[in-house]
Image 1 (cartoon, one colour):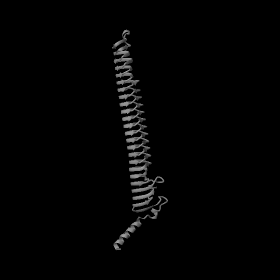
Image 2: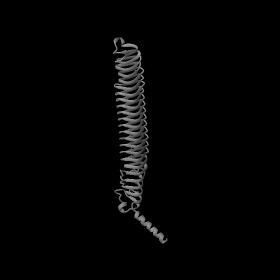
Image 3: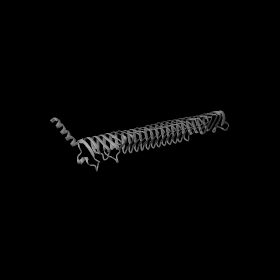
Image 4: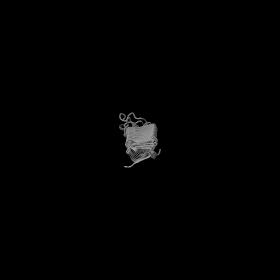
Length: 395
């Protein structure tokens, strides 16, 4: 062997000896479980439960991590919370750390406090803290705090806090607080807070708070607060607050507050408050407050308060006061009329100012014209109260 080759061999042996763990670093089995570290200055390859490595690390089950920069391969899940930070690539049966930054992939992924980057699991990604970035759970994606970014759960995506960004779950998307962005639940989307953005639940979308944006529930959309934007419920759309915008419920649209905009209920549109804009109800449009704009139903349009604009009822139009026009095939019942009413039977219980057209028209006090087969004006002289074809009185 030449002298030069001998020198190369000697240097190589010295490097390998220097890389072998010392008694102080490699035999700390009582704390970390021990490791074989082929490193120089902390850089290289480690086998076992080393606490700090820059490079490539292999271990059966992690615990008491400190900092891993590079590639960490873990074959089994930790017995308890491993702690520490992994920056780079974490792969294996169950990669876990308090903080996973980069790419983490395995049968299951077990982040601790937070992630940043991409996590992907065949079975489930379960985080004790916030999951940020792109997070994928083959069957389930679960966070004990928040989901931020792109979140995909094969069957379910569940967060005890907010869900923000693009979130999709095959069966259920569930948030313990608000859902913001684009959220899709194959069967259901459920939020304990508000829902904002573009969201859909295959069977239902349910929010404990308000719903805002473009949202749909296959069978129903229900909000404990208000509903605003473009929203639809296959069978029903229900808000404990107001409904505003363009909204539809297959069977019914119901608000405990007001309804404003262009709104339709297949069978009924009902508001405990006022209705304004275009309101369409298959069998009924009913308001506990004022009705303003165009309201139409094959059945009844009614309110115990004021109605303004145009009301069309296949069966009846009924209000305390009408200022505008009404068309009812069967009956109109109004206490005070200022405008036009057309129906087979028009009953103005108090005062009429304007024109009514029907088969039988009746007004307690007339200040206008009645056209019909028989007309009654209570404030005319006795001989002129009942008249055929036309009756009139002007104050």
